[in-house]
Each structure stands twice: as structure tokens, then as C-alpha cells.
Amino acid sequence: MKHAKHGQVSTEIIILLVVIMGLFLILLTVSEKRDDQLAGIKKYLSAKDIADDVAWNINSALISGFGARRSFAIPAKLSDGTAFNVTVDGPSRSVLVEWGSRMYVAPLLTSNMTGNTTLAQGLVNVTNILGVIKVEE
Image 1 (cartoon, rainbow, N blue to C red):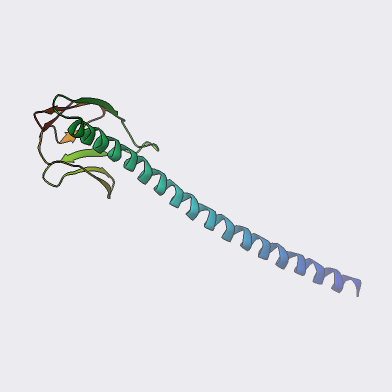
Image 2: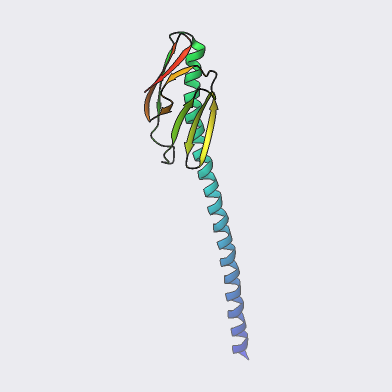
């Protein structure tokens, strides 16, 4: 009779361990999804910072008046190491930062620009020449 009770306790412990392992597995899955969401938000915010910085420097050169010059640096990669492209689109008055299949757009105050439209990493100079914004690397 004692052996039957001992076997029943072992089965109950195994069932309890399976339930605990299942809950732990669910917790790990939810945690992994949350980490992926946070990584995506971090990339987005890094791209936003870059686009806003480029737009701010171009807009500042425009607002500062004739002869104003701004210099700024574009990083090589987003904060997590992802490659990206920066495009200054005069006709649509915007700065686009693209990475993978995603994009962030920052507004510009003018479409009156000359020079490079696709910017590479490194130093960029923006000059206001009689109201025309010249962008050069």
C-alpha cells in the first residue's frame, strides 16, 4: 500500500514540474518579444535623431541668413550597428533616413538647395548662399 501512495506523489511532482516549466517557457517567449520591440524602437529613435539633426542644421543655415554655415557629422551606423542611408530631398522639403525596409522623415523649411542629395558618413557642410542652401561633404 505504501508503494502506491509513493508513486502517486511522484506523478504529482512531475505534473507540477511540467506546469512550472510551461509557465517559464511562456515567460521567456514574452520577454524575447519585448526585447525585439525595444530593439526596433532603439533603431527608430537613432534614425530619428540623425534625420532631425540633418534637418536642424539645414534649417538653421536658412534661418541664420546669407553666408551662414553649419558643419555636422553623420555617424557610420545606427546605434545598434545597422547600416542606413540619408537623403536630402529638396523638392519634397524633407530629410529621409532609411534602414532595412523602414524610414524616418524630418521636414525642411526650404526646397531651394544644391549639392549632394545622398549623404555619406562623416562631416557635412551646409552653407546659405544668397538663400540657396548648398550641401556638401
